[in-house]
Image (cartoon, rainbow, N blue to C red):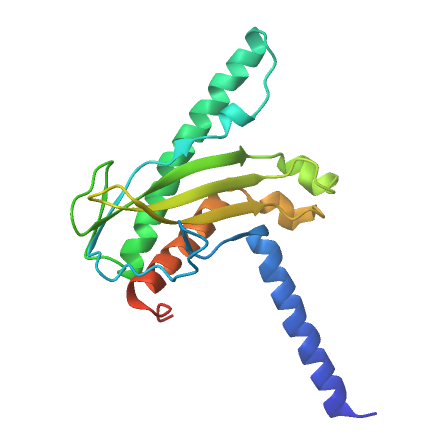
Amino acid sequence: MDVKKIQGAAKLISVFMLMTLGVMLGGCGTTSTLQPADAASGDRIDLSSYQHAVISDFLDAATAAKKFKKDEKGEAQKAAYQADVQAAGVTFSEYLQAELIKLKVFESVQRGDEAGEGSLLIGGDITRFERGNAAAKFLIGLGAGSTYFDATVNVSDGLSGEKLGEIIVDKNSWVLGGAISASQNVESFMRGGAEKAAKELYIARFGEEPVK
């Protein structure tokens, strides 16, 4: 029996299991790189001239895409859902602000809807929002009760309002269900999306990844 080979195989299995667990904890889906508004140009976005950032609350583009019954109960459900998405739009902008401050991407990061010269205006839309059902995810899986959080992060010049680029957040819970999927929620997806978006903005401003 080759002990070294067994130990090596065990180590590889452990690494694989840790990587798999990391993927499951983070959920499925992705957060894209910072894509230029003019996709055909292929140029990398350079944000080195922007010292400040202003972040507006993310808008609700999910309610209009979701179907509700045309009755009193359906209207009540729509109103509650809309309020939930609007609150998430505020929360996501707060998470993004916190990540940008943590990484020291800009000299200042403020909340608002207007930005001036030398400032970057960051905002966007929440395009899909489903809190899901933890019990259904745990007991059934196969997509039942899945959690979703999709958003578009728009980056624009604060003075002209010209859109420079966008980041697409596309998150959903682990499709196979179980305890991992049941524990995933929109808050964790928003935090993960904000963290990746802040990292992309850091790279665009400094030309390198942030030091861990």
